[in-house]
Amino acid sequence: MKIDGTPFRSIWRAGETVRIIDQRWLPHEVRVVALSDRAAFATAIRDMWVRGAPLIGATAAYGMAVALRADASDSALDDHWQVLHATRPTAINLRWALDRMRAALAPLPAADRAAAALALADAIADEDVELNRQIGLHGLALIKAIAARKGGRVNILTHCNAGWPATVDWGTATSPIYHAHNAGIDVHVWVDETRPRNQGAQITAWELNAHGVPHSLIVDNAGGHLMQHGQVDMVIVGTDRTTANGDVCNKIGTYLKALAARANGVPFYVALPSPTIDWRVKDGVAEIPIEERSPAEVTHVQGLDPEGRIVQVRISPTGTGAANPAFDVTPATLVTGLITERGVCAANPSALRAMFPDLAP
Ligand SMILES: CSC[C@H]1O[C@H](OP(=O)(O)O)[C@H](O)[C@@H]1O
Image 1 (cartoon, rainbow, N blue to C red):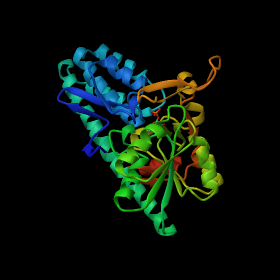
Image 2: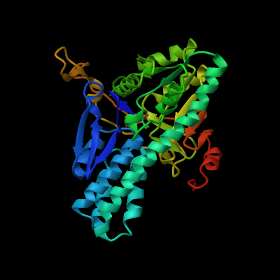
Image 3: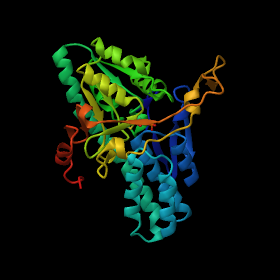
């Protein structure tokens, strides 16, 4: 999408150099950095310079390609896989991308692996852009139907950031919104700030602002109230891992939004590209590993000080500890539909298998 009129992706290549937007400093600074070796890629994923399931996968693919320049031996291929896979546990796209890279590279002579890996990483990035564009077209049909039914502004609530910075481009949850806005439909987005890291306040609000999409920032706990008062026509969120049964793992707080949506008759949609489906897992609550991040993300908050410096401030007493589960799992029974690149399907095993007969085991 565009930043000040200039088209951007969240990750791109300039010759042999891979560059990213370091998202830790958004919305106040757009810092572009080059990632030069395996350690830099691992740090960028682990410390959330880049984040969002599809982008994590694309970044890991490029990380594998850059790592192979240093050592492309069979043992190194496995070691690169291990180091990059260990960065974050929940988004399945990380494993999906690394598995796809290793499967394609292992049969090649070591001398050919780095170049082949770079080409495959490029392909994974380009595929992600197209998958998300297609998600947007299928989601657009849902928004159009609501607009036709109510004959006015469509109010959409989203949680965290499943926007273009969470992917290579377009986003997943935001792609239908961008398509609807571009088609002249009057859409407005309730943007959950999304504690503790505030990806909604810092990234979703920033990207919607840049594209001119009407939006309002809300505290995470306002969504249920807005739904009770008829202020939310649909919820669209992203996901970091969706199971073969249709259970949806996403940023912490998503489950509560799904409960409020069900209680108020608000359709709850999840937008995802097929690499985010983990066909090996059925019961999301029991089986998906939930990342536990630093308590400091809860006890501190980042923002601009009066002098315009980006600072962290403590918001709780020094002696207060914190728990920080980064994700939760919404059972498939609370999901109205899954907006995929092939169409909208029900969140159940048979519908998923019918939508993806070539992928389902
Ligand atoms: C399109 S996937 C976006 C997904 O990833 C985010 O998590 P994080 O910022 O920790 O990587 C969040 O769960 C979003 O819904």
